[in-house]
Image 1 (tube, rainbow, N blue to C red):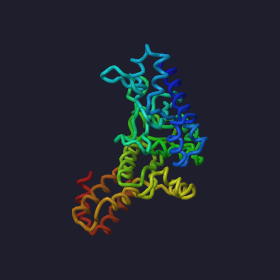
Image 2 (cartoon, one colour):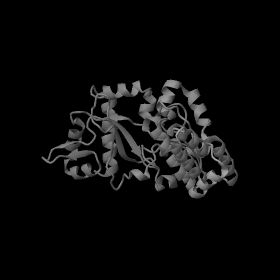
Image 3 (cartoon, rainbow, N blue to C red):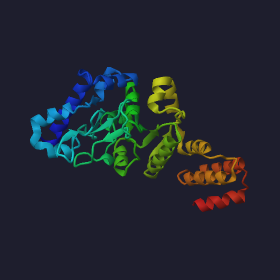
Image 4 (cartoon, rainbow, N blue to C red):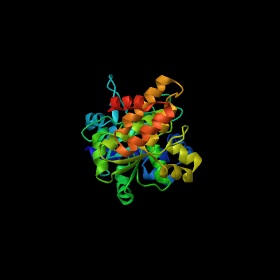
Length: 320
């Protein structure tokens, strides 16, 4: 059995287990509780492994001679005693496709009753699956990205799926990691315009700012949506509705304005040392802006942070 055939076979088993078995009910109920419709569950091909390795047993009975390949591709795990178990045992399964639509890997998510410390488990890298080369949902989103001439970049699998369920087809995900050169090269083939929409907490804002800087350095026009602190994009749509979500998306800030808002949350500006760090980070971000805008922000910093021009100019020279 070759890779393509094996992945297709196991994916069918995962989907059948989710939709048509008693053990799959917990996964299906979880997806429904998270607001996903039957259509979305089918569109994204969600599946379910079972706690008792029934899927693995089915696979091995028909293709036992290929166990080495199955282990390499991340479908099974061989223990020291020689026994075999499902690599994603007991998880909700999320298929991952390359930019041409070929199934190359999986992400397995724990369900609420599962106490495993790793919420997500990805297929191990192999000749067919290299995480740094994959943007989640790119194969389905690229046509819409070209038509709209911008892409919405999110972190999570469910963020992307909920956005698509609500009619936003130009949405892709970084699978919880920083953008790579390979990701950026793929984006360049479809658009130069990106809106980043990550979680609203400090970690999400920091990731958004970091990826925005990478994209700017590669010539992209970038804006960042300000998601409220207590939400991720999936939750924002689920609990606050599409109208507010679209408003926040379309009101996305320039990277500079986003940085100012983010840093005001990050630092206590009543503390002089924190003010110095705040100014330093803003000046560092200014490197990517026009000279005219740099001067405007420079004057604004002097006024808001209580610096005289000579003092602020010193920090500007240090930043450059």
